[in-house]
Image (cartoon, rainbow, N blue to C red; front, top):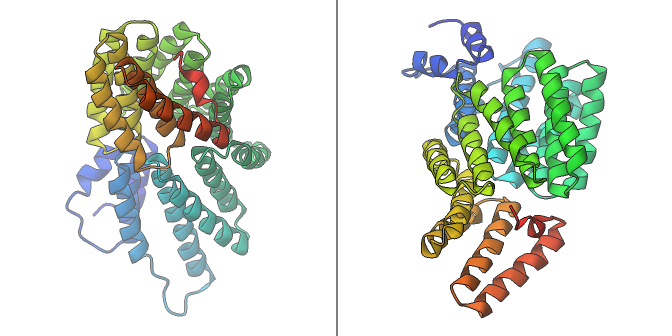
Length: 363
């Protein structure tokens, strides 16, 4: 078998498929091999598979008897690598509370061992989980703390990620001008760092907030830039994300048939990696396009699927967007009493969560 550095270099070169193809028949007990397999799966968007491989790696991560200082450090740092990687997967799958708990445990360990790099990485993951849970102010506070650290370390890739994350928080808060500036700065940093994947996700973030802010041309143009980058990669999640976002932009432009084709492609890609949360957003968007084509019963079926998909996650915004859409559709189908009950409950919860979802009905 090839040395572990060979597979790490493949991952650094964004070639996760080659890693998995080479290791497809591996049955050994090397924790580091299972870790690179998990990383490759995560890069491809297979988050549930990645979690299982990380867990297998953790099971084989044993500290030797009478371990010396270096062996102890290797064991602990690898343990934190595993925890933080798993937290990312849980968060992306919409299991945000678990993501926060896992990242928090990693932070406690890093702090106790005075591993500053790991502590900051753990804070970053805790912040992202808090963002997913709708705790935006707490998330922003942690992200700004991590940003200060990355700036002191001149870590361009880290800074690019934080500005991308802060842009997303601004979007959820309705602070569009500030959010657009954050995404643009994230893209500049990613380009400077020659990090094409971060650059692509920066374009996606800028496209998404531009759509909500009513600049649909900027939305579509930036998704095209992201799509061009993702096309030459194995990033299934990135491709699905771009197709769904592009579909949203086309839908808002009134190009419903083109949007539905994009939603169909996103549906196939998200289904292939079992990303049920983002699949919920596809169903929600598809339902809106069908509604505007006056295909109300088809739209209702899609929304019912979206509701089921979001119900199994911590994705509050998705749950609420679906409830508002359901209320509007049920009203259009003639049941004003049920529609009002659904709408009022969703509005009360949205305000309680401090979100602005109810303001986005025009999108």
